[in-house]
Image (cartoon, rainbow, N blue to C red; front, side, top):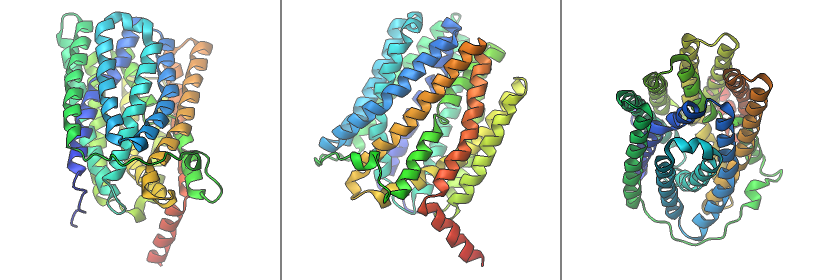
Length: 410
């Protein structure tokens, strides 16, 4: 089977994804562990992520407006520069950063809003119908490969330094270099300077005629942070079990290995007509994986959950992204309105994330048990994937897939 042709700028997008994911994998989990090590207080992390998730969609919409008024590359580069500012701030504050997590969450929320407004638009622009599964499969494989190597390097650096906190500071410095390289690489992308009006009302408040988009927005709400919240807090659970940063890095690498294999295989063989069944089985797998946390927390249960979740998320990510992009393409009044839809999609997602963090805060206060609070939220998030699949399955994109498959089989 020959591989579909890629957009001329897809290779640049792959390089940027690799650099970004390497930088994030070096620090994403370890920032949480760093805050935990300096505070041993789950509430510190909860307020940090609550601020992050609440601020992101506001900035995302503002950045989307600027993308239309000026250039999507401007906000993308701003997002990269703000990442540099964020990690430089961690280096300056060092251990005292734990006393400023709310403000750091706000800063990272501004950073994410700007960065992802640009990144999502770029990824949309370099994919077209019929090639999305292949593009996302390669993108995911590259991203997960970066996430395979980087956490091991972070864990090794931290464990190798006599003062482990100093090891964290070295890792933060390495991340600054990677983001600087990302900033340089972004200049190989083609600018998009054409100025156009920003009309988000239609995307943010879809009418009955926009049936597919309404279901995609409902699905966005039920995602509720399943891509970020478990990733951020699983590292804390592993550190609670082992008290060892190298084990946290190895745990992230273990998840990445599974995701690489599944992403590459499904990206190569997944087609529009198979999206629905892949989404279905990934949903069953993820919902089932959450049941692991109904039993006592052990190293074995953490490994089993990570294996099931990584496979499920890789399968789901390809089909979900392709379906969402297809619906945007079919719903937008013109191709230039894609930024408004990408921005609007972030709003219900942020609401869901915020509710999940508030749930974790309530559980942590009620039971005074950090591990239990994390496990309950992860179980709820895994179960919510059933609702996500239900809403996506109502779209005409996947309904058509089912009818086509039925005709073919008959």
